[in-house]
Image (cartoon, helix red, strand yellow):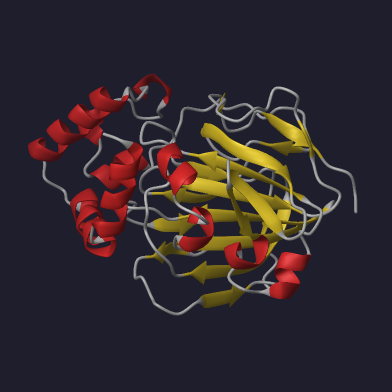
Amino acid sequence: MPESVAVLFQYLLPQRLLTYLAGKLASWRGGAVTTAAISAFARRYGVDMSEAAEPDLRAYACFNDFFTRALRLGQRPLASADIVCPVDGAISEFGAIAGGQIFQAKGHHYSTLALVGGDAELAGRFENGGFATIYLSPRDYHRIHMPCAGRLSRMIHVPGSLFSVDPVMARRVPGLFARNERVVCVFESAAGPFALVLVGAAIVGSVATAWHGVVTPPRHRRQSIWQYEDMNIELAQGEEMGRFMLGSTVVALFAHPAPRFAPEWVPGRSVRMGEAMGSLDAA
């Protein structure tokens, strides 16, 4: 299908209805029917179940259990690095944040201000810092981990659209990651603030965090903010901080000075959680 046609469908489809129905289907416990559907999905996308803590597809009562499956111990050792990759996926883009702009794809930028939900003070904390955007495909491990140790300060749910976030849409939909629904998780670290932005997408039934549980659904039309400064929620490097109920995208933001990304990092490269992402200098 031509890219232009695929994008047109995305604009025309009832995104919220489809995502609602997908969420219902993903939580349905249909016995042998669910097992057959999960098996077909795993074959279609080439899911490597040998890495899973539970490799038997019959053990998953619903798609959500399958999507958020745990890995066997030792499958994702942490590299000796200041920041490690927080997810399994493919590098979309990475680099510096300059003039409040983040590079999305050729011909497309979006603002840090829009991404974090319009908070100018928060956006300003990442000026002259760095970003990394990582796409999780349906075949990938769907849990999200900490790139470095951090203390949670706030979480923001920003309502928005539910476009697909695959590479075609990233090339074609202006400001995609700042248009879609997203959950912005802000942390403080020894090297300064950083944020993990969990971007929702079409068919992604829900987004959850380790400290809150399911954040969406429900899908509200107004922004929601949770403050955690007084709750002393600290997460270690590599610790799970959230999960998607299907593949999506994570945008990591780092304060000035920008990270020195690992030399092997290039757009389009497949990455795994725990591998070296780069190094940080204290602010």
